[in-house]
Image (cartoon, rainbow, N blue to C red):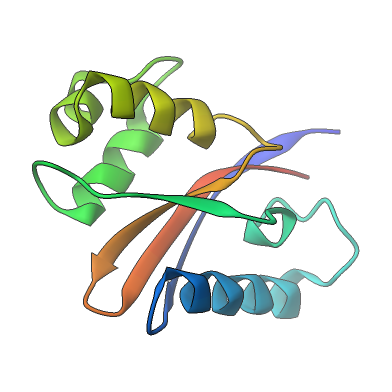
Length: 114
């Protein structure tokens, strides 16, 4: 069993509605068989809000971090939250990372089993 990164953006009145929408879209695109490498493999999420920069900047910093929280990620969240966010992002069995990227838009990202 392997893993791959995913990024899925969905809209909703809140993060829960957006998460359920994102999962449904992933099921529609990849099926219900499991090991899709998508948000469909996640059963929960944790939301992070950047202290500096935008939500899109935070998602990009997560995706560009290589093995440890990058200086961009630390700048966006602070050291403790950056380490925590990266650990969640890097865990294929853990929750998805959620970031608000628009007024009614959330981006979910991380590693998922495939």
